[in-house]
Length: 215
Image (cartoon, rainbow, N blue to C red; front, side, top):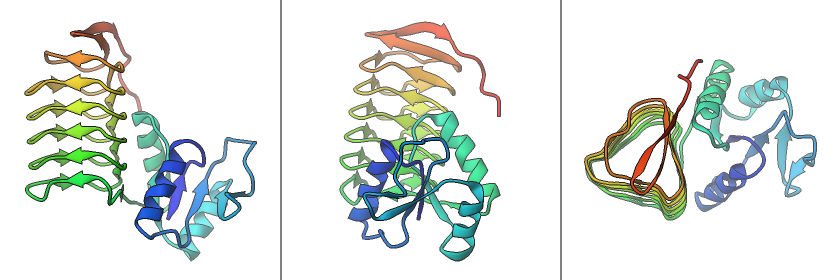
């Protein structure tokens, strides 16, 4: 497995792979940091350019996972490495609690230790569900959504793609949150949120509009 990124969140993904007994042939990719060793923890290669990635995909395996945050950056990295022939792959902690009925988790999701997912839930491609967040029944989560530690997504909530939900934020039942929305940490969302905006507070209100995403 190739982990995109070699700092911060990428180390959390390494722990998930350890829990899954999938450490064989693990490597990292980072072409921007100049303070990294040749091997992370003295064990795992850090690839530094696209030629090394191509060689890895050709000789080791095509699976890669996203070890970075930020919904838009995750989407861009996904597209970049799929074009190189990689296969976006989920990493799901065995220490997450996931319901057994009616759930659909699309490819490339990172689901971290302590996450709780109820039944009848759809999680879109490339989502990041971080430590101890909870997803209530019948929720629908779009692609490349990032849900930070401790956030609570209540039942029958809809969340659009490329949305970021901060730590310990709460979205009340039956709320619709648009695409490209940022919900600040600790916010309580009590009513629907349109696309392309930042909301904060208790109750959460729109603080500013965000530019539309351009890929």
